[in-house]
Length: 307
Image 1: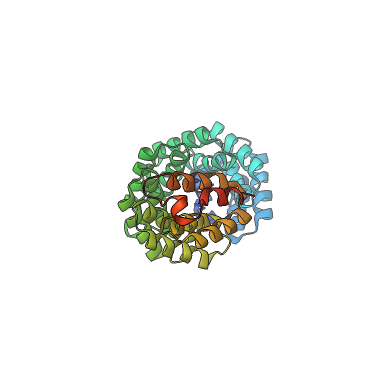
Image 2: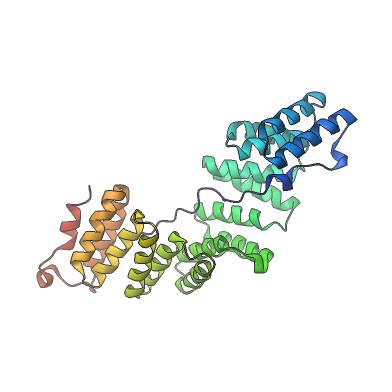
């Protein structure tokens, strides 16, 4: 029943000004330098149209200006123009295959498009050039997670946390906790979710996922508490209803279970099939009370509410 849908994107966006190249070694003639620097300044100020115009002029003056292609691609990236960003990153890397940051941002674009192998390749190329950048490990860890390789994902998430040290974020611990959850290492998953929530008490997904970890370890009351907290923060978070429904059912709180299940189906009917399987699996187990003992065949009732 648990969703293994890691973040769709790495959610790591560097400050644009911090990655706009402005080193003197990048330049040719003085006119190219002046135009390029105008683009850098405009980009740092958030004047993206002016930045694009300047970088385009620099490229016109110097067609093999890899850094200008990269910077223009970065502006396109930041403004949601993925296809144009792709084209510029591709061209920058054709000219200069050692331009590490272009691999990073192209990897994120590949991930967003669902082209996981290409994204994995670009993150790996980036790390070969710059092996100490935590966001690249996090990004690659997400790709490994999506591909179901949780051992490699954990290795990358661990490396990211090691590099960040005391600067590690709630997201860092959440991602690693999710990988532990996927591997059914529940004690470590719970510890990471605890850490994530201590840093960000409004992380709805962390509450829901920790609730599932509690449920898997049999701590059903804590599971209900976490799902309830998740729903207090986001009343439309369907998976928290599905999870709490199963926890209620396992606690023999059948009316509450059915109520939560019906709400979940209304919000997200696509999740009903997976949830229903968990209910049936539990009801058919030796742990669950039999229908004749409770007067309720929960799987039959749930089936009628799958939408």
